[in-house]
Image (cartoon, rainbow, N blue to C red; front, side):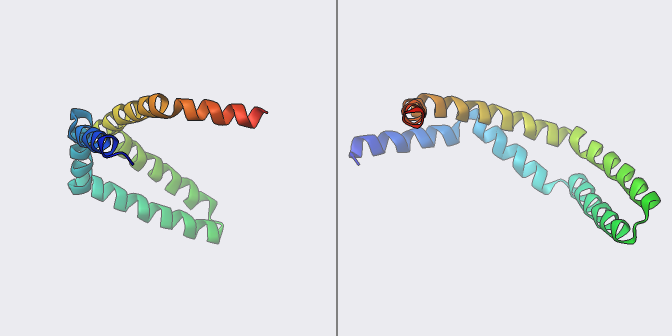
Length: 119
């Protein structure tokens, strides 16, 4: 590979990793990993899933229904947690950037491949 191109790609990657959007995602992810409340919710969800599996084996339909309701409540807590909302918003921004980059950088190859497949 031409060294100039490699240098430009390396510079681009560095700029991407230093971008506000990328740093926001990294920060949000770090917050998710260290938050005690989220850890507790995830642990509770795991316990409920184990209870559902046991209830299914025992064909205990009433317990299954109760555990599913408990699971829905925990998932709602998870989905509405401000750290999760923040992470999802940051991830959405990065996904939009990635989709744009994919379109700009690779669209010529995608079109060529689609054209070849149609032949």
